[in-house]
Amino acid sequence: MKRKLLITGAGGQVGQEIKFLADQFSDFTFDFAGSKDLDITRPGRVEGWFHKRNYFACINCAAYTAVDQAESEPAAAYAVNRDGAGHLAEVCRKAGTYLLHLSTDYVYHTQQNRPFSEEDETAPKGVYARSKAAGEELVLAAGGTVIRTSWLYSSFGKNFVKTMLHLGANRSELKVVNDQVGTPTWARDLARDLLNILDKLNKKELAPENLQGIFNYSNEGVASWYDFAIAIFELKKMKVRVIPVDSSQFPTAAERPPFSLMSKTRFRQQFSIELPHWRSSLKHCLLEL
Ligand SMILES: NC(=O)c1ccc[n+]([C@@H]2O[C@H](COP(=O)([O-])OP(=O)(O)OC[C@H]3O[C@@H](n4cnc5c(N)ncnc54)[C@H](OP(=O)(O)O)[C@@H]3O)[C@@H](O)[C@H]2O)c1
Image 1 (cartoon, rainbow, N blue to C red):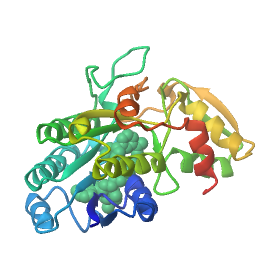
Image 2 (cartoon, rainbow, N blue to C red):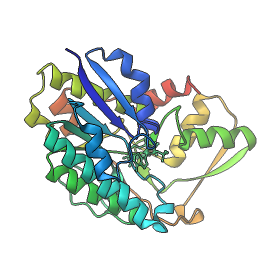
Image 3 (cartoon, helix red, strand yellow):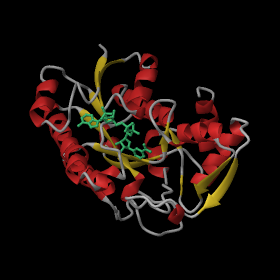
């Protein structure tokens, strides 16, 4: 019998990537719920949605992701990222449904010179980061799994890669920040690996207790936004001069973490999944753009 999965926030980057891959996971059937189908801020609606649907697992891709706008709309950000995540986690717990909940590298915001591990202290700054950290707590308390990811891009939705391609098509020179480092992550890789984890769980190749807690997830390697922009134009063979600048030249309402490199050791070991280097994934994604 096929197992049923629920994908919330299905209209976003990760949600659309899961939809793109769904046919490759033939042991599952999928319910894709966009924000209009299932608003996770409404507890009654979430509970009603689960009634008699018997989901094996839910991947929560729903989030308030407008990082700067969140500074002036804290209630809206907390409603989705904390309370919505909490409602979903509680309903999943009651229904016996595994929950994979996406969170962010923004919860790590301290100065250090080695990749963050899941045990490192979090220090979220700004409304978006704090609302995501608060959501993580509720998800973990209800027995869900938190996957912290970073610098997502995709051929779907809005993201840095698409912005660079658009700007690069219209300008010969661009300033890009060089003092924030992290790892660009193709949302397709994340989507595929989330489904791989659930597939392993379904086939009993993974014990449920090995799914507990927090996992960092990104592609491998390291880059600044400047490095990332250079790679995009190089791979696309676009002649754009990229000028490295400090983030002080691009003031934003929410402060970005200067260093958000994450260790993926726990993810690799627990799930026996290898992660591609960001540059090789970027190359694949750019073939679609
Ligand atoms: N993008 C990144 O670089 C990045 C980095 C680290 C972590 N993350 C995390 O990764 C996850 C997925 O990110 P993403 O880039 O795929 O985000 P995204 O493209 O912004 O998609 C988020 C989706 O959530 C939906 N949504 C918003 N409020 C909702 C609600 N109340 N109920 C149900 N759905 C709602 C949105 O629908 P509408 O558009 O209709 O509002 C949207 O389709 C998020 O948890 C995010 O915090 C993202």
